[in-house]
Length: 253
DNA sequence: AAGAGGTTCAACCGCCGGTAG
DNA sequence: ACTACCGGCGGTTGAACCTCT
Image (cartoon, rainbow, N blue to C red; front, side, top):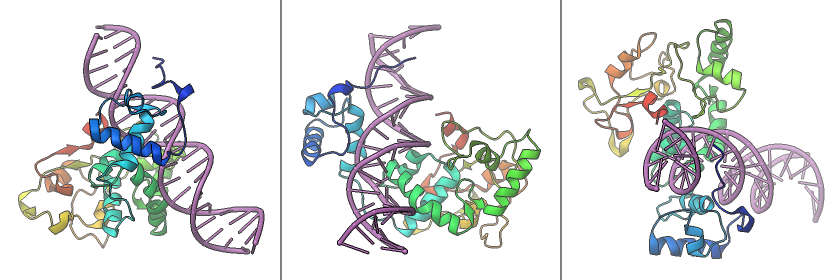
């Protein structure tokens, strides 16, 4: 389509924000609220691109930001959310109050990825490394089906499950990995799906797609069968009570 | 002490979807 | 229906900082 740039770049500052610029931006947004980002820089007397202002506000200046180190609970929550949503950082951030998508993305790339690798888990597929490798090899033989592992291999990228380019698998290559990713309201036999503090009850191994493992404590029977089994099981995932979150719809957003 | 190499994270870039005209 | 614009997103970059030798 050939879009014009979001602002006149010739007269905009780039790089790190100064204290004065921060103060101006904060003062303007306090007075006028988050409005039109395109016109904000001029109105606020900032020599910045509107996008840059938005990013600075959202990622750094917003008063409700938590800052500081991630807790162990947040770590596990991010891992669980990533196993379901992939690199949908904004969706993940939406479930972590006070955290930004950028912050989570950085944290994932610098800490959690390594953490999972140390556990022997492929951060892209959330499956044990050797198992993921085997699945990838099998996928190369059987080119008519697509698996996450295969996608990752082809793209040779660390973000094999990236949002824009993600292809919804046409057929499950890894039967124990529920690619439908449907999050459903709790069923009767999970009358108390949430523990205090919003912690989910699905076991960690299941959340990573290792549903046959000995560690599995929730005994989800979706292994090797249709996803309707898992949707019938009905996790109340992260407090999404009464909401059926179908990843395919997220993809179509 | 200093330089090399590694890590972190704020910021930028380019693309996409939604929407107003 | 089409075009242009805007906000938002995810991937990437690079400066600052840290650790090791």
